[in-house]
Structures are given as structure tokens and as C-alpha cells.
Amino acid sequence: MRSQKDLGLYIHIPFCKAKCLYCDFNSFACRDDFVPAYFNALKKEICLYSDIIKGYGIKTVFIGGGTPSYVDAHNIYEIVSLLNQKFDMDRCFELTIEANPGTMNMEKLLLYKKAGINRLSIGLQAWQNHLLKSLGRIHTEKEFEENYRLAVKAGFDNINVDLIFAIPGQSFKDWTETVTKVAKLNPQHISCYSLIIEEGTVFGTRFSKGELIPVEDELDREMYWYAVEKLKTMGYKHYEISNFSKEGFECAHNLTYWKELEYIGIGASAHSYFNGKRFNNTYNIEEYVKIINSGRLPVENEINVETKDEISEFMMLGLRLVDGVSIEEFYERFGKNPLEVFRNQIETLSKRGLVTIEQNFIKLTKLGFDLANQAFMEFV
Ligand code: SF4
Image (tube, rainbow, N blue to C red):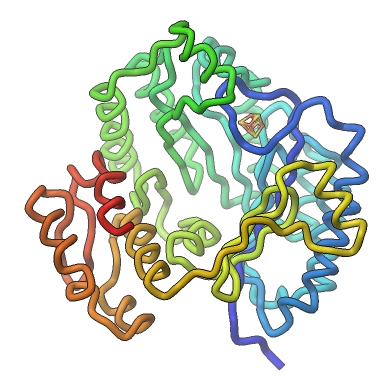
């Protein structure tokens, strides 16, 4: 019998060749010794979930990290094979793996394809080698281009390229060159994120010592709007604050998050939203393996999502989308009209020029995109 309920599935691979200086993800360099134990634990966690998610069908898989392409590709192949054995994958149409330049080769790419992975997300970040070096990236622009072409040659026809703007030391010209050169390669999807200097990273420490000067807000916004306009002229649809795609190539997995649909996260620190609850796995990779080996799920911070929280989250996440929140979809899901539920908030935000209502959608304006966090806060 066909399962009726859909799920997204995230799998976290926390290993990297080197730690980038801005990175606060749960990722580790120099832990190759731990890769076999970690993958064994991932397999056990998948088995533990096979009963829990009976009746659900996986729609999308995202293998992220970390740098999943850093580890031996046979590990990835075995994980995807196990997913096919243990879960209902019949309707799974998008399987993404994150890959970094300098860790990919033809053998790996072909094994991913053989496993059924049909989308590649490549982290480039910047076109200029001096910026890549300043970020602590392990690769050059040339390696990116070589790897990109290799991926196309291997048959990948759904590729995302991740970019970062507002990097300390990055000029507007650097950014325009990055966007233009990448778009000329014609990937199906491009993500552009503004660099956030996070505490606990090398950049965070340098910033607190006054050694790292963040990019001015004005330049940050100029860079952002440059990308929006330029990518539009190069055939990309701006569909989420930071994401652009060719028609039909929106990232279905990330849309699961933005549409507040259910997903399960597997691996250390992976987050889930399932059965009315949000929870995450323990961050510590040793602890993760230990708990899984004792036959339990390493779940932490489980919270029940009350309907009022679900409604707020639906608004906040939905406003990230360029189309905004569909009044009709809101009504179908919650049996209420969002214009009534959030009358005050929408009025306040409309007066400030951050939100507008167009053809049955509540959406951010251009100013709203610049001040998105302020708009989201209204719905907390
Ligand atoms: S490759 Fe990605 S996950 Fe790994 S350290 Fe760099 S930014 Fe972080």
C-alpha cells in the first residue's frame, strides 16, 4: 500500500578536510579515524527509524555537512542503499549531496549517480583565490571550475553553487565577478548568503579583537540586490530570500523547511520536525555514536509545537519565499484566515512598508527583504 504522508530526510556528515575560518556548523577536521564508527551509527539510526516512520514516504533526501564528498564515496553509497531498503523511497525525486571542490573526482561522482543521487550542491563561496584563502577554504577557483565541469560530465544536470557575499575584504567588483562567472557556467541553482560572523569561530575571535572589519550594511545590501537583478537577467528565478533557480529547479528539500512540512534528521546535531515535535540529535559525535550503539535515539531538546507556534512558524518561514504566504494554503492548513489571525502584525508591517498583500499572498516588499528579521519578529 502506498504511504500517504510525506517526509524530507536530512543526513549529516560532519567531516571536513579543514575547518573554514567562518564556519560554525557541526563539522570537524582531522577526525578521519572516526569515519567508520560514525557511518555504522548512521546505519543503526536509519534502522531505528524504519519502524517509527512506517506509513511515511520520503520525498527528498539531503546529505549535508560538513563535507559529505570528503569521505569515501562507498560510505555514501551504502547509506543510500540502506535508505532504499528501510524506507519508502518510491516517491523520492530529489537526492542532494553537498560536495566541495578539492574533494571530488569522477569515481566518486559516478558512485553518487549509481546510488541515485541526482542533485549536487557545490560550495564555491567566492571566485577570487585571495578571498577563498581568507575564508580558509581548501580549494582554488580553478579547482571549482574543474570539479564543476567534471560533475556535468558525470551526468549531473541539477547543480547548486553556494556563494557568500559581504566577506571582509571583498569589493563590490569581486562580488559582481563572482555572480557573473558562476551564472555563465549555467548551474540550475545558485544560493547567495551574506556572511555572518559567528561567535566561536576564528572570524568571531578576530572580530572581537578588532582584527576583522565587517562589511558595511550598505555594501552588503548593494551586493545582495546586485545578485537579485543580475541573476534575473541571466534566467534565474528568485524564489527565496537567498536562493535562485532555473524554472523547475527550486530545491524541493529546502522547500520542506520553508513550508513547515515534516522532516527527519539523521546524524549528529541533525534537526527534525515530526509528529508535532521539534527535536535534534546530540551534537557531540562520540556521544552520538555511544548512544546509538546502546540502541537508543540520541534525541535532545524535544519540544511540542503548539498550534499557535506552528501558525507563527508557518508565517515566518513562508515569508522567506518570494511568493510569500498563500492565504489559501494557510486557510487549508489551519482553518483560519491569516489576515484575521495576524491583523495587527500585518497592519504594522504594511504601514512600515515591509509587507504587502498581492493576489492572495502575504509577502515581503523589497524593503521587507532588507529588514526581514524585523518582519519575522512580529510573528514570534
Ligand atoms: S567545508 Fe563547509 S562545513 Fe566544512 S568547515 Fe568549511 S564551511 Fe564548515
